[in-house]
Length: 465
Image (tube, rainbow, N blue to C red):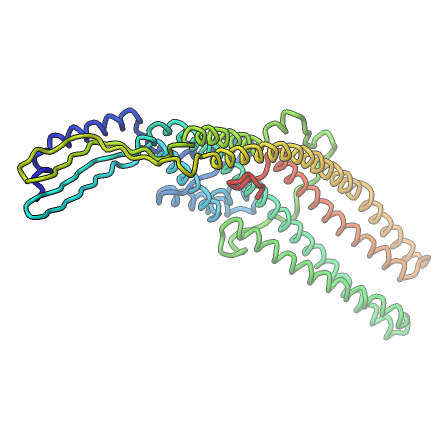
């Protein structure tokens, strides 16, 4: 039954040789050893000291786990906390596989589709009709160069976006660390305030029992004690929320797995020690670079659309046909198959590509304007928060402390009422709380400024995530 196929094995060997030659012309696309991750590491370390690690093997996972364990041993600092997140955050590790997906698309674009074999067999009263053919989509060969170039741009954009993901994770972790540290410091301070308020209230009750204080004075101390207890409860809950947020970013199971230092980092001594922003820093924004790559990829796609607007599928290959008796000669030839542009001339495809390109071009222009505005606004926030925290540190807190000391001297000299002394004490408490908050806002502003100079991760359509 399959005699013609067996009889012409040599013919099909020649056909396969022909197809292999086409494959040789197309080249052989292969995967890289690192999946493009080395470039992500190298670019990331231009912006931060820490090193991202892709735990894509058991050996790397084990090494990362040992490193995380060592970093968790002492109280965390802002450098170590970022490194732990880059080693241990599960979502970041999942995002790294976007590189493998993008590289798979790039390799696939550099490979021709498999050839197709078709066979028709029919028999009627001793007459046979046997048709055999091997075809392949040669249009893919003609468009392979542009398709590969498009996927290469996409792969570069994925690498660029992965750098932004890593830097965004670093910023989120820094912010979570600052929030947790500020919350812990606020709790520690409010615990002292609450203990002092409770002692003062107990003293006021005894003074009232001895006939030295009236009910109004006792009520004031009781009110301050109750307010400090409520403030402590709010602070303790805020501390739990902040520590849980940090725990999640670090990829740990419980806040007990890490230790925080006693207080936040000190404020820089002077404005000379602050960060500065210039045009060269702004030009390094990675999201603008990624947008440029996306626009270039769309431009190449537009060229590809114009190339294939009439013939989108063109298949060609050797064919053999037997019609008649089994021993009759087999006809050899070529089979050609392609779409006929009777109804769709490809104009809609080209118009769509042009519209996508122009839309992305205008979006890129708007993105650059917004990026410049973001940097200016964030730098203003950074400088303003420093000035506020500096005034609290150098003026407000020392002033409230000296006023409390002076009030205490006057009270001991019986020149001031107990109520006025308590007012001075509460004003000092408020000043210290406000300074802790101002310090937290400053360090968050610095972290956000660093990210503003880098950019924000984008989705596949170029929108900020």
